[in-house]
Amino acid sequence: MKNIKIAGLIFALFTLASGCDELPDPAGERGVAVIPAITDLNPGVFDSKDLENSYVEFIVRAPEGSVPEKVTVVASYLDNFERVTITDAQTFPATIRIEAKDVLEKLDIQTNEVKNGDIFTFELLTLANGKTTRSVAALSVPVACGYDVNLATGSYHSVSPDWNSDGTITLTADEDDPYKIYVSGLEEIEGLVEDLGPLVIHIDPATYSVSAPLKAISSDAWGYGAISYQGTGVFSSCDGNYTMYFEIILADLGSQGQYSFTFTRNQ
Image (cartoon, rainbow, N blue to C red):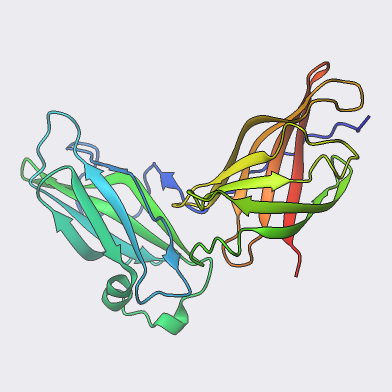
């Protein structure tokens, strides 16, 4: 039986953060007017391999019963807080598409200055009832490689020091959904038969976060009944690797805890 050791840090490629800062606020008062929301972000990264054609898109929604006169989207690079105006909307809900090349031009940034992991921050300035306020919602957009299904699939080396697992697995994409990935071999590494597999994981096209709904893989795990996995993680779009955190469940013994796995592409 495996030793139980719980691992637990889960990464994200973007955040919808809330809060306030103590910096001087050129927008004036905050928290006294209409507060719009950012929803339906897709895609949610700027493609570092094609910044000229990359964009992010989202919907700005006004609270029910409110009618702002205008919402302006402002942008900053890293922690510089430039807050340069990018675009605005006067009817809601509004679909906003922001081209990376426009952001770079307005922030006076050269393409060759931008690297993977850099963050662009977008904030909303709302004009309502004669007052302009800055929303507490901020959208952080990372620079990352665009999604390539061929880089997300193939032969992988799976390692879990926590679960004492090390071996080769195979990832294949669904024919109709390139973000739906089938993972085969996790229990074959353990000498089990994956008669209930494969494990299914889903890559979020906006953030590259990964989810794995509860799924039994083998009906007989060392005499303790079916073994099931569920979890979360992140897909690295630049090298094709995965960092995963799985809760492993045995039918007769219940949850065995959460374990970290890395899936590294075999060259």
